[in-house]
Amino acid sequence: MLLHSLMAPLLLGAGSSAAAPVSTALSPAQEAHFGWVNLFDGKTLNGWSEKGGPYDGDADWTVEDGVIVGREAEGAKGGLLYTDELFGDFEFECDVKVNAPFDSGIFVRMLPGLRGAQFTIDDRPGGEIFGIYSNGWLFHESGGDAAWRSGEWCHTRVRCVGDPMRLTGWIDGKLVVDYSVPAGMDEKFTREGRIGIQVHGGMNDPEDAAVRFKNLRARRLPAASSVFFEESENGLLSLTAVGEANGWQPLFNGVNLDGWLPMGATGPVSAEAFEAAGYRAKDGKIEALLTGTAGAIRTQRTDFRNFTMRMDFQLTKLANSGVFLRSVDDGTNATYNGSEVQILDDFNWEAASNTKLAPYQFTGGLYGAVAPSKNVLRPIGEWNTYLITCVGTRMNCALNGTLLWDVDTVDLKPKSGPPFAERAMAGFIGMQRHGTAAESTSEVGAAFRNLFIRELPDMGPSTR
Image (tube, rainbow, N blue to C red):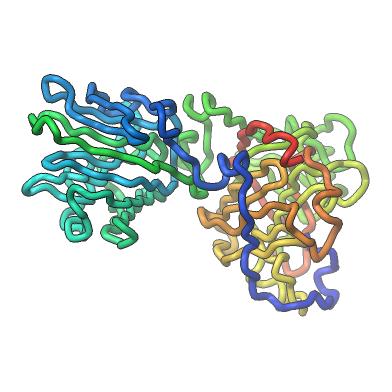
């Protein structure tokens, strides 16, 4: 959204450099969605299971003195202990101690019959610490052996992002491995799965040999796609059975605009009326035309409250649009009765309009309040992906897999618009048609596709 004519000069303050993202502490309830999640309660194995991946087994897993202990079971049986929750792009950390000789590991993206990867913790003669293994060795000779302290507690941290995966690992704060799976490997890796810890088994280890884990926690990192979606050759996504089971729902059926309304409409309208309003469904996309009677299209549902949504958008030159979140169709400004995440031709707007954008007016900005921390907008004509989460007063936004901001709106003092405490906490989701035909060779300003939403639990009165 830009509240001025394209060619009209306007003074908007501090120039075009993006401001630093606002960072605030998380409440315990919000932390479950936005920050580090504790994966072990120190007393039980609640949240963990020996079944749920490609390496199910029957190792001896116990909790002793606030620590998860893994040993070979009778018959030298081993196996993994998996998180119940799935993780796509994430960081995981824990403290590990091995009574050697013993072979263990940290596993990422584990699902039955599918392929993830392992950071090895093989504390035996000839073993390897933080090599990368996946149905065979992917990477040897990390710096893990030199950093490892056998028989002592070592702090480990691993990061798993992307598709193909990039796997990064630290021991006691020292970077020891940073490996990217080569593109085009014959066997497809899964995009999301469980985190696992291992007793290798089959080693006939000494009776006192064991691995111990404590302080296990993880945090999700923004991602554009996951095991929840299946992609066709033309880039359109459909939900997998896993996606449906995890609560994802389509916001757009790819065929028509059922479930949507032009802003200001009170009931379903025809395809012709939609096009007159400035919107149409075409080839799996919602196209926002440069001319029309309505300034936005919105969901018929007006009670979205806590959710994660993903969507792709594509710009033409000098396009000006945005995503409305929890807004209200009552004749007031949807940007400010709810929230808006900006979509704009960052590349050409200032030169064409002879204006200077405020930091929050660049693509990815929380309009009127927060600037994007980085410029990761792809060139005109390419598809971009938003992943946006709203839980209570907290919101975050990732563009093309990069987190742009993560804020609690309670702490924001908008530079434009009312305080967030005065705005709706539930409402519609919409896309703005705020472009101009000036210098454009296309009848379309912006296009949208692959719109999905997963509603999240209410966080209670502490988050309004």
